Image (cartoon, rainbow, N blue to C red; front, side, top):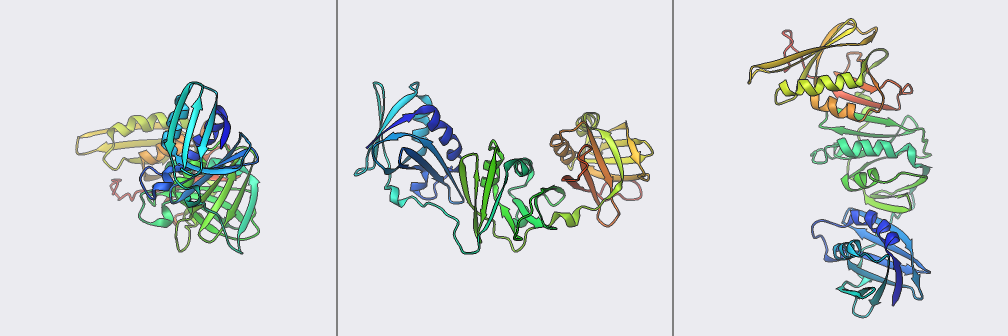
Length: 377
């Protein structure tokens, strides 16, 4: 059985599908790509026990067949070939693939393609959503960079997709102190709440994110069709996803505005003087923000003052993590940031891009406790 292959088309497909090839052995067959050729279309699968990615590309073939061949060997071979066109010659009786590229020949043994565990979302009560990819992709990209995947509390160890107040929110937490809330305009007909694990969150976060996305949610897994690929993933087993809205405590009429680049510069300098917890003392006083960092173990400290715009925020002192602040500012694209004043119910600072007037993207950062002597505990 022969198929003519175009290198560019093959690699474009494999570069994405390969993200689901496991790094460590689960089952020997999952270290392979499954190729299914039907009507001059080749569908490729990879599966690592949690995530399956399926892609397609066009081929020339007189026969329909399936083959299961070593993923790493195939990828390394094809990437190093200078030929743009070559031939796959497959022996289905022995599960052997021969690659012929000009005068070069390569042979590899595979597995029975019938043994490859293809994953599908099944059930009678599936939830189906079709939306513009741009409505979710940026939220997932941000969260795939900040979520603590090693978190022992499973509801905090992934990216949450939750219908809250009738709209889809995409949220996440780092360490129980650093929160992100992305509110979309999507209004699913059925309420649901799911938590995505690292593999699918990172894979989707690296996608181009163009056109439409189709999501199908089942009881234990979901599928996401995006950019011509289909991601099928198990879901994290949590009793209930975290509703981060409950932790965002702010008065939208009271806030300060800071130049982001000036703030970034101060944080980077002050981080050199901070303690092992990267604590920063902030004092709002009128139209000034005083920043203080200190490490008593090395007898060093530093202080800077930044001019701010103050919208009805009373003078106060609070403590935050420099590292978390740097991470948040790195995810904000605008030139100015807004820090909203809390109502006092929850010790949380809420931060957003000043231009984001509809509050669709919000960062939350838990405050350190400050005693009467303005020391961080």
